[in-house]
Length: 131
Image (cartoon, rainbow, N blue to C red; front, top):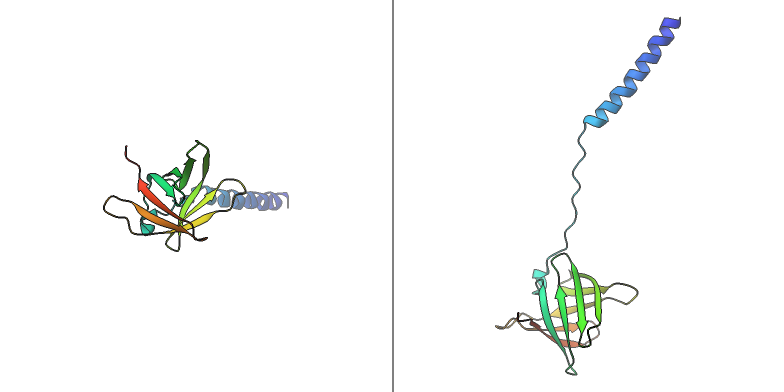
């Protein structure tokens, strides 16, 4: 009887260790990190741009290939956040509680400049920054 109990225990342990070994032998599926969508469908590529507002004030926007951006106003104040395209618009989501904004852009001209119109009707002129 003791041998039967011992055999049953060994069989149970053997079954457990086989399941564990099977799990160890099964390679984990590689996880893919979703890359940010390129801005090509909106005409805006990663780079640094001069932005001119309707009132004549200027700023600089840098769109990074990793899906982030940095806006710098004329006084040097920076706003950072995430950049993506949604429904053909360039969308900027700043860090913190500030609301995001999406912009419809026109096809770039020969010099690379284009206009961008925000959902609230604000229009700006965007020009690739010259090195």
